[in-house]
Length: 213
Image (cartoon, rainbow, N blue to C red; front, side):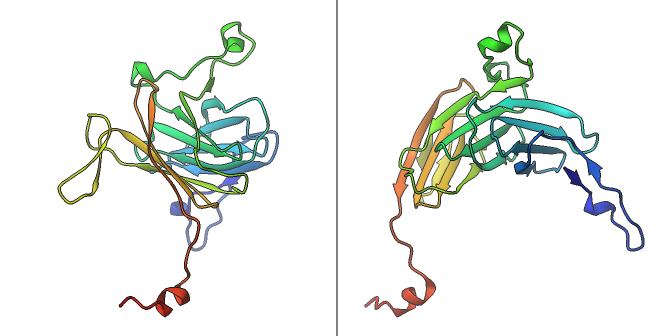
């Protein structure tokens, strides 16, 4: 895989692309963090997710999503770059701890790692959950982290009936109309907060033809 920094592009200069040997097979999904300092990649096998330093191309972390090949739908960094979420056609979402500043957020090690048959860097997901209303018709899942400015847990309504985030949270939106909102904590626990299914979407033409009297 090759990339260039567009900030370094000059009018009369040609930049040599930076090369990263990310995977043996083709890259299926990639994501940059908010500061463009970290690059996450996943291949068309979908079993391993790798994170590289965009300046040095050094491999920073390696995560084991699972043993069975899958089609990756989305790879997403949290705004603070502390977490990485991965969605696939298994209707599951895996959340990995990118930064280990919090000792309670150590990613789980497998038996193969404990006996030395798998790299210590190939950590498994700290949290894994199943999308509750996703159907077999799902061909795409998009993920979005919700920003958090409080330390207490949960999501509650304020005086204006707006959701106030009280912990880490992530939303998963599927192209079959299903929507899930989860909160999660540093101890690995999580809760399903919203679980909805939208059966029909109206287009603009249909909307403006309606009578609202």
